Amino acid sequence: MRLISLRKGRNATTLLNATLVVFLAAMILANIASSMENPLMPLYLQSLGASVQQVGLFFTLTAIVPLVFQILGGFISDSIGRLQAIAIGSTAGLIGYIGYVLAPSWKWLLLAQGVASLAFCFVAPSFQAFIAEQSSEETRGRVFSVVDSVYMIVGVIGPPLGGYVSKYYGYRAMFGVALVLYGSATMIRIYMARKANSGAARESSPPARDRLTFAGLKHNLVSMASMVLAGGVITWLFISDGIGDVAYSIASRFEPLYYSNIIGLDNTQIGSFLSAHHLVMMALLPVGGWFADRVGERAGIVLSNVAFAAGFAVFLAGKSYGHFMLVWIILGTGASFGRPAYNSLISKAVPLSMRGTAFGLFTTSLGLVSLPAPYIGGLLWNSFGPKATFVVPFAASLAAAPLLWVKLSPAEIAKSVKKASEAAESPAEA
Image (cartoon, rainbow, N blue to C red):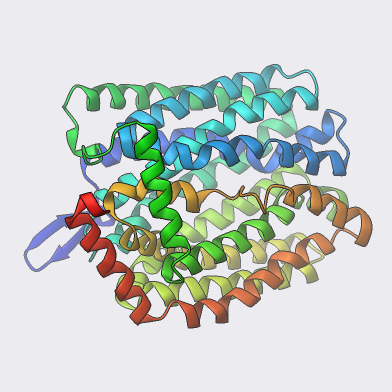
């Protein structure tokens, strides 16, 4: 239990309380399911008759639902409670998994993927806001890193399991196993939401100030827009997030196709990359959280971008299984320093009553600009060759590192945190 406690003199300050532990267990079950199928979805589409360009079109079209509902899911989380919003999203996700199993063609998967993506819209912002509310500013980076470190077990188990089941029993069998896991997580989440509604877990609910009204949604959106346009920390986090989303969306869906079609790797080998990636993150996320709390979020975010650029540089030069394993180890190192720093800084720079909306905005990789990104990735692949698709995230990470070092200055961060604290103390003006 050393992982979930910090020694402070003679007292042990618990980082993960009982509610958060059960919450995390449900997250692990659900995301083992998604990590089983997510890296292999492009190959499943291809097995159902989709071309490379149609794979890009598929992920572009299915991005429309998160584009519409991501921020709304965060606002609903702010309004009715984190656990309640997660239960709603999980129900939609369960329906989507049933569709994955039954879909007769890749075109039918469009409907299943659209419904399943609602789960991410509700769960992702609620997950991060819930964690932020269980920590103090002094320990927030470490709390995020400990939760993320435990959570990384999904990436260790899921991809190899998905690769094994799909290789020996087929893709539908893989989705069937994922359905059972996701269904179990959904039942736990619904139970926790009902318990929260009864008042037994009131500490997991957001402040009572916001209710689910159009006026409340308008207030939060206007407030977030003003922060994004103010030219401070939130502005540059939003810009860097958008650039990174576009760059990664262009490339990510084509990685399995590159490994399989160009390098000649099988599904088990492809799954092992993400497993190694998550093992690295399990080991290094606590270091990244400590680094964010002690050295500063700016340093963690910049170091992360440098590592991503290095990882994609190795990717572009890679020719064998060992090369690409090294890529995922480097990317895991970068994510270990970037994730806790990024989440910690957003949670400090945004008022408590708007965290769900903020994380809904920042966790989406499917904004207006990034919507056509997978389709663009397919065009780059066909027009300039497979490697052209992966030059984009390399260039984006390389450019972002020095820019963020300049724009996320200690003075700007302190100013944003102070403003958020003042807004929390004066909710009428937040």
